[in-house]
Length: 230
Image (cartoon, rainbow, N blue to C red; front, side):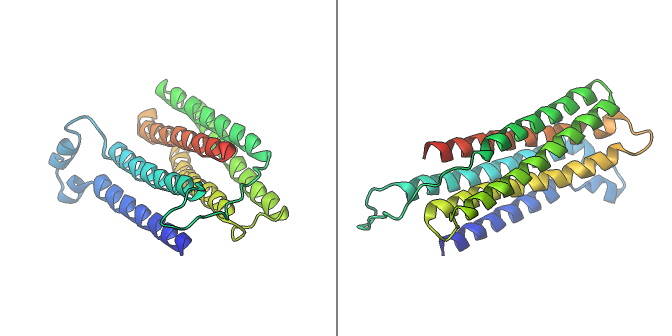
């Protein structure tokens, strides 16, 4: 029942984000044939897409914070409402998680390289950085799946105990967000591959992808550290 509520919360959070971003990125001035709306949207020098990303990150941060809080509370051996929960058996983290952490770190470095390159007007080098970021991100996801397989081979199934379930939910939720980032990254890469594309036309997309990659790296470090110390 708890897992059902958790996944319902995930779906609700994603729906709220999608509606917010759709609202913020709608170019109403194009539909009306005027640029008055565009001037109003950029009144403070902030692009709607950038605002949408920060709203999304706020929603995701709240979501992960709730799961971390639930993880800490569920793990506590203290009696709650007269019931002592003693079914928590810690998961032995697969060593491949260290390799996965390094892969995600290199992926983030590749995205930062792309951001620096596009800032200098070097579209080709930016494309190479984005490609490296995407490849290492995919390698990270593959590594996470291998970690799941190792746990299952050792008998750590999601239904075995709450610690197992939280491990799969936390790592799966993070992987889901990284997969969504890869979709956006592919769209930005396709835009960059157009002949004669200017750096200014793709700069914002690369910057936002880089911020998102750095954010997911920080989130993973927090989750990994939490799993290690518990």
